[in-house]
Image (tube, rainbow, N blue to C red; front, side, top):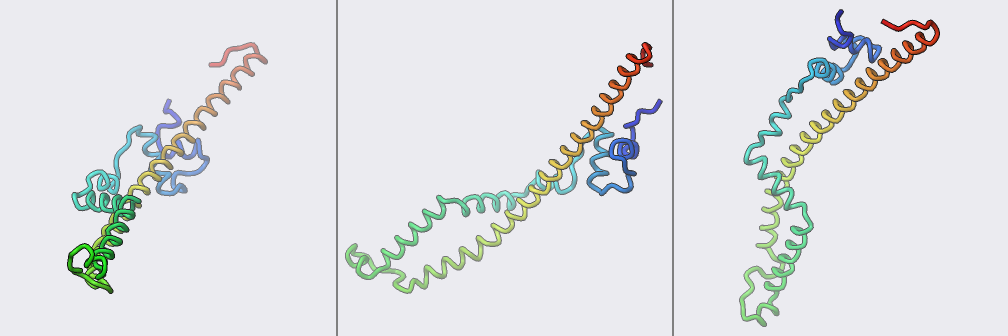
Length: 175
């Protein structure tokens, strides 16, 4: 006798009460995995695992650039820059201001930093969104597998309950 959960079509019909063809692509994918009992990585998961050096660098730049440590140290550099380039403070320290007000060189440096940092952070955010999609797909798969296993257990308990009730009424043992 063929087991009722031997094909994805049988699992869909028996446990979910719907034909396999009516399920969406993710549900079909999970049912195939449940029946085969093995998990394979999809293309985007393989890409996320094997990130290039540039991708890993973008992740590190985004992690540093989005931290309070970076923000505070960057603010300190800007304040120090403004103080050292103030004509009065520079004269007191005996140095010559290299970028006096309105800090044209500082503006150039900040513009170049923003021009480079923004796309790098966006690359990292794109990678993070791929990671989030993978995580969500795995989470969905685990939830659907759990639901299917609970439905299987529920059916087994129902069968056992019916068998016990039949034994009590008829005094016979079930097959």
